[in-house]
Length: 178
Image (tube, rainbow, N blue to C red; front, side):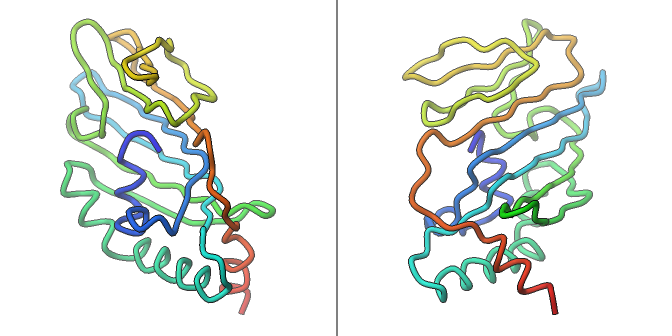
């Protein structure tokens, strides 16, 4: 997912390879002074666990991280977490994170200069939608650029190849049905 912001929100779990987020959308509002607000939408949170017990363990860890440790790591980088939630839509488990920041440098990967605003998307991800201009970058990556006076930035990326995995939506619904 691009950049590391979503990985920080899910904490160390993503580092283990147990959880997968298929699509990530970033909506960022910049103020003239460089501060702003962001909304991160994580769509289709999945587990690559091969047994029911492994998938349940992945969900428990996701919920524990969602409720605790991710906030400290997220805010250590200069952002303030204002709201977050997990929810299902059909067979898909998704999450939303709302945050604020004092400088654009607090948003992982975002570069704001007098020439423009940009972010580089790794080669393993496809840009599905953006309100910026997409250009080729080094090593198969793509760069999204916005004018220096842009105040609303939006981009949605999807993992190009998703490992075999199972949606956690049914387990999530079952856990909160009682």
